[in-house]
Length: 85
Image 1 (cartoon, rainbow, N blue to C red):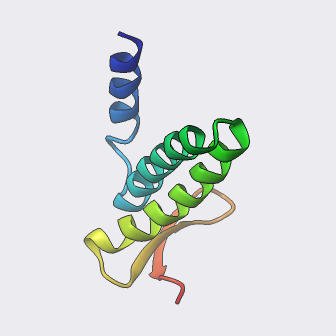
Image 2: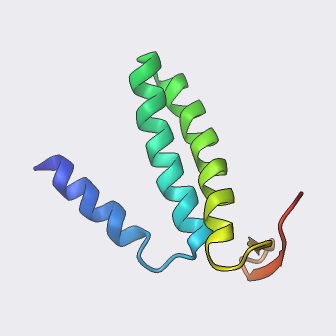
């Protein structure tokens, strides 16, 4: 039951996000699960979440606009620009 509720909450939390944000979120969750399972500690889960988040963001950024990424400035406003090479 707890796993079902957690999955529903994750699905709802990424429902209104951009593809980049969705990719980052899914990648971070997947990376944390895999990193925690492989290493058996919190440090492995944190490293997995970081790597998965970055990888997911890169993959998600090319889903709608190849070569374009969403960014946020320090005021929280989103803008689109060329992805880093």
